[in-house]
Image (cartoon, rainbow, N blue to C red):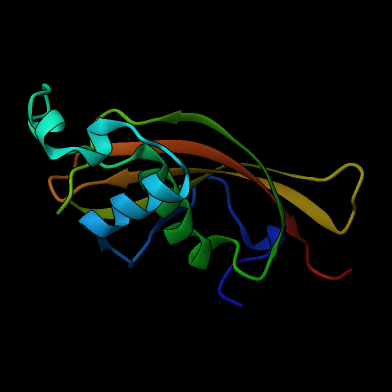
Length: 150
């Protein structure tokens, strides 16, 4: 179990996730086609070249999913009961094919569950940065985690 139980988290704790990922054309093509997203900004190099970006912009669902996926190993792997929600998702900069992304997480809040005494809620803020340390994605994730056995 790589994740931590509810009781082990401290508010303000910061995790610098080791895993980094360079985004490929295949990543973008697969997520766009798997989700039936025909947006030419993601799939048509000629069209994308005529936009303010000058090239294909990676589908934001990939960026968001990668951010959450990278965070799981260090946060909730083996301890998660359920993800209860994702809030305040923002993507202030575009991601391009060839960008290398890294993720950081901060524990913002935690509280015992009122209805489930063996579980507690932790609110994480996940942030993704590109190779130029520009913030490309951020969200808050509320996770219901197992607690230490009483």
